[in-house]
Image 1: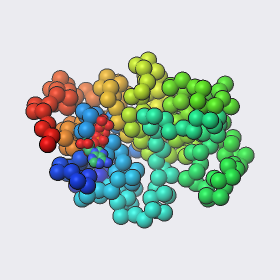
Image 2: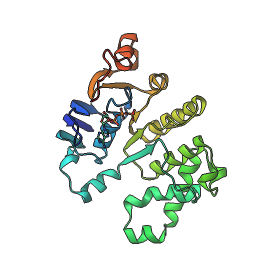
Image 3: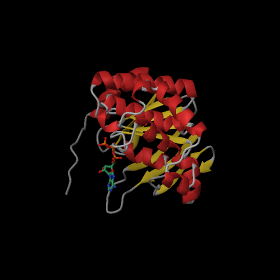
Length: 252
Ligand SMILES: Nc1ncnc2c1ncn2[C@@H]1O[C@H](COP(=O)(O)OP(=O)(O)OP(=O)(O)O)[C@@H](O)[C@H]1O
């Protein structure tokens, strides 16, 4: 279970909170999409969940452990349970699909083994299995720089799955993909979510995708939660509240 309590974040030098008094609890099995305009605080929320951003006030607890007070070593252990997929894939272009996916094991191993790039037969077998699960069997040994955007994101998903995560986090994972490919990636995410019984939390700009795939929508505006519920309850009013500004922000 992920519990976010009274979470606020104010970046250094800023006069406004990026996140303000957020209270959310998420359970295994939920497929959550975080909605909001650019600057609403979506990425900051994901970064607080994986411990990359410390709260200014409040707590983020994963299975009753407060991430915000953990030492780096403890956070590393918690992060093993959190698979992360990124907008720009974060792959190593000159390495093969298999090699990139195997880097998903890095959080589990000592630095020396990572440096020499040595993996056990069992690790390689599991990597091949997840590559097959995401539909890239034929491209196992292809360098990722030669793949399409959709194929690269499949590699990103396979890498996250190799960690055997309990929580899958995505920060705009389909923003650089066309609508058809985005749909395929979300279909794959949903399948993996169900098969591995995960908690999945994804930031997404595309509201239609979110509505189609999420079991729960959370909308942020100016760092606050303005909607938290099932997609069926997110109607025109909620859409307008989320995406249309009443006043333009004045920057000095
Ligand atoms: N490192 C930072 N330093 C200072 N301010 C930041 C930093 N990162 C984000 N912000 C500010 O915090 C607020 C929330 O940003 P955040 O990136 O979380 O929004 P977002 O909803 O993910 O936006 P986008 O959809 O454009 O990625 C914005 O006002 C942003 O300018």
